[in-house]
Structures are given as C-alpha cells and as structure tokens.
Length: 341
Image (tube, rainbow, N blue to C red; front, side, top):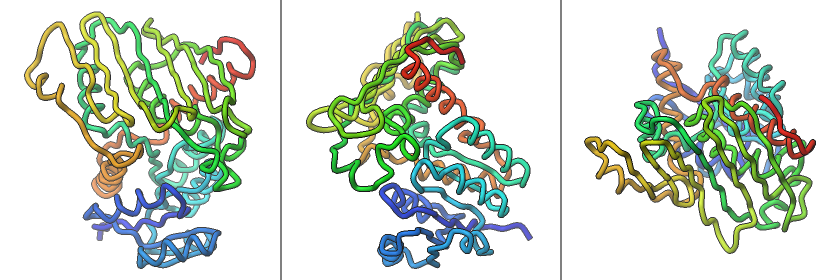
C-alpha cells in the first residue's frame, strides 16, 4: 500500500528550523514526526512546541521507521555529511542552502541519493515568490527579446551579535560569507533567469565585522547568452535590511522585483503589453522576514514528487548550479582573476 502521508524528521533546531516546522504543519500530506539536535537545551525547547519524538543522536533518528524525509537545518558545513547519511539510510532529503560548501560534496550528495533511490531537494524558497514566478514566466515566453543585463542586489544588515551567537557563523569551513550565505538565494535566481554563466570576475572584503569571511562582495558575470550580469552583496547596510532585488533588462522589456526580500514588483514594462500586466505591476507580498513564504510551497512540491512521482524544480542538480557559480566567485576573489565556469 502506497504511503499517503510523509513523516519528516528535522535535524538542527536553530534559527531557520521554525520556518520548516510551520511549513510542514501546513501541508496535508506530510507531518513532523521527529527532531534532532546535539544541543539538548535547544532540542528540548523546540520539543515543547512540537510534540514529536526527540533525538540527540542523528543515527538513532535515521533508524526511526516513521521518518521518511530528513530536513537538514544544521550549520552549512554539515549539510553534505548529514544529507549523505540520510541517503545511505534510505531517507529522502531536503536541505537548507547552501547544499554543500563545495561542488565535490554536492556531487557526492547527488550521487548517493541516486544510488540509494531517494530524492534530494534544496531549499531555494525565493523561486516560489509570486513576483518571481511571473518574472520567470516572462523570461520563458521570450518577452525580453535579447537579454542585455541582469542584476541582483542584497543590501542587508547583520550585527556582530548575529555572527557571535554560534561558533560556526562567519567561518570559512562552516558558514561562508555574504555570497555563500545571505546572497545565495539571489545568485540562484540570477542563474535561473539568465541561464548558464560563461565567466565571472569578483572582489570581496570584510569591511565592518570580525569574521573569517567577506561581509561585502561584488561580481561581474558573462552569460553564455551574451548578456552581462552584476551581483552586489553586503551585510553592512545601515541601519536595517534595505533591499533584496533582481533586475532583468532586455531589448523589449525591463523588470525589477525589489523590496527587502524580492517580494514586490518595482518595474514591469514590456514593448508588447499582455493580459494581466497591470495586475502584475501591483504584485506585492509582505513577508515578516527575509525568509519569505516559499518553504511551504517547496514542501508541497516535495510531497507531490515523492508520493505522486511528479517533477520537482529544486532538485540536487538544480541546487548545484548556483553553488558552482558561488565557488567560481570565491576563486576569483582569491586569485584576482576572471574564472571560467
């Protein structure tokens, strides 16, 4: 008999975990059945609200027959390890960004999932923002004509206290800087909208924080289509998150999706108007934080893929693409040279 509801076990009960709890609890065909965290205080605190089985040993949670899917919400440097362990245990995986800290580990995650016949999904919740969905539709319909320039801007603020709350934050091995962490969703969008990237040149620096990694970086891209691109990212914006935007310019169209979390349409102009354009121009969501509302849609897609066999957008292969670009950005920052992908 086919399973009608998926049991989700979450490893890592930190800052992002509640967004997963809320998303899981909102979807009919999945349920939160287990939590795991090595920090017993953090685990017990999460367990007070989520009445599920608690584990301080990940291997024990992987043996729980009620866990069909493992949601990886641990520090970034542990994503690959925990995903690979889940795959070997026969569990499907959904992992927070970045899926891994390097392309080699991402490839191993993809390989182990295929080998063990489980599905691997990567959290890129901004792809599900309504304004971004409409922008992608416009790109796919060719409404921009020849692509000219794509830009993403992440002007956010993160205090030193934010980085000091956990030892792994702001480290090269377990976190990564603004490009790997805060701007990774936006870099994913730029790649998704603009297509494959030919080369990148980047600068990065640590301007106002005490970190191992960059808090500010810029990158210039050449897309294989011939279009150019620019990425700007910082966690030094004063005094609050100012902008998280994506702009696409083409010979017959200009669109900017802005707000602080790619949550509102700032510009929507095309040479040939289409039905619904006036409605799209007014499109705006009001997420309480930069995380937005996309986790719920991603879990819905996960359920449809695993239970019904439907295609999914955010597979491991798809998550790998933006990671490869981010690693090329870091190589360029390190070497001071243009890097070809």
